[in-house]
Image 1 (cartoon, rainbow, N blue to C red):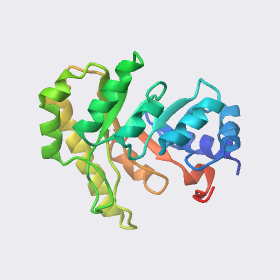
Image 2: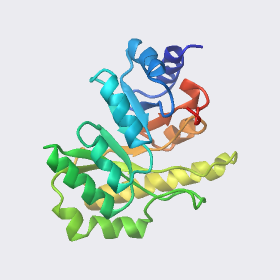
Image 3: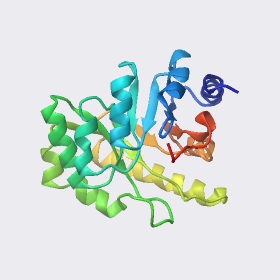
Length: 224
C-alpha cells in the first residue's frame, strides 16, 4: 500500500476532530512529497536541524510539528516557521521559545509535556511541576507563546490496560488544567497522545492529535 493510501486509510478510520500528524523523521523528502502530492500537509519531525532542512527544501504550505525532545540551543532553527512544538517540559525551554518567537515577530503555539509513562527515558512534567510552572511569574510574563494543550507518551508495552490508564491520567490532567488555568481560552483544547501502536486507544481516551510514523512510512532508517 502506498504512503498516500495509508494516510487516507488512517484518516478515514479516525474522528473528524482528531488531527493526524504524519511523522516523517528520518524519511527522505521524496516520501514526504508522495504524501504531499496526494493532498496531505501535516508532518512531524523530532530533530530541529532535520526539520529546518526539510522546511527549506519542501513546499512552504506544509504544517510542521516539532514532536521530539527539544534542547534550548536548537529552538532558533525552527522558531521562524514551526506550527506547533509538542514536547515542552521546562520553564527554561518555554522562556527560550518565547525569546525566539519575539525575535521572529511570532506567537508560537506549544504543548506542555506531562510525564505519564513508567519509563525513566521519557520526559515530562509531574502534576505538581505543571502547577508550579503555570503559576510562576516567569511563565505569566511570556507574551510570544500560547499553550494550546498537553502532550504525553505512554509506556512502551503490549499491556493495553497500562497504556489506557496512562492516557486516562493525561486526560484528567488536561481537564484539571483547563478548568483551573485556561477556562476562558478556547485555544487550550489539544491532547497530543497516541502513536502507530496505540493511537486507537488514545482516541478512545480523548486524544485530539495523533502522531503516526511507521504505520505510514514504514520502519525508520536511523542510518541515513
